[in-house]
Image 1 (tube, rainbow, N blue to C red):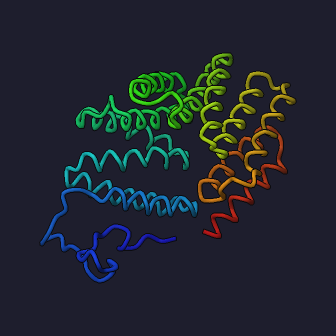
Image 2 (image 1 turned 45 degrees about the horizontal axis):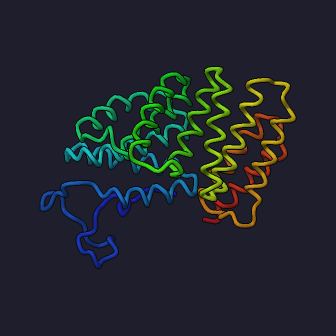
Length: 276
């Protein structure tokens, strides 16, 4: 999927389709970038696994936000970049944007808000993914304190936090505490009936079991079986997010030596990406 002008130019007439009328830069300069529309287009690219177009879209709008001194827009784009760089494995670019993210959180006085804490969580997850679990743990703890002061204990945001926190703890060798947080994550995703995230948690447990003890095949396999039950559940919605989860879980199945299941999950994801 290619990026075109319609992806980044704002329509002049709200009743037009945006193809014929645009704001001429010399006539009218918007004060902020259209974050909601950018996220919507980005989700479309991710649903097709089109990471090249996603990066081009974010690159364009980051420059626009900087030119406009639109700090909120800039922070929103940088936050989306954290997920993109994790998908593409770009450690250098991921680390490069962290300082600016922290600066913007302070400038906008967002660091102690739920939205700010969620951005910290995303940065932490990248730190963990790129080999700095201790740095990730520090940010997870900071985000957890902010969530605890603002959210109910069973809020879905805690599920993602606990899941990623557990993985970082496992990387440091603190397996006992990691399993405690996996249990907390499972409790929340079950209560919210989030089948894909439940599957991800079981996959994370499976990988952690083998990290703790490479001979722990039985417990690892049991966790993977639990993950498959959630992905095979007739009530699960097989959308772009489901495809993303299948891809993610496929990596865990492959890491645990269940290559046939890994290939099947990859195929499920491929069919959804092509269908959508």
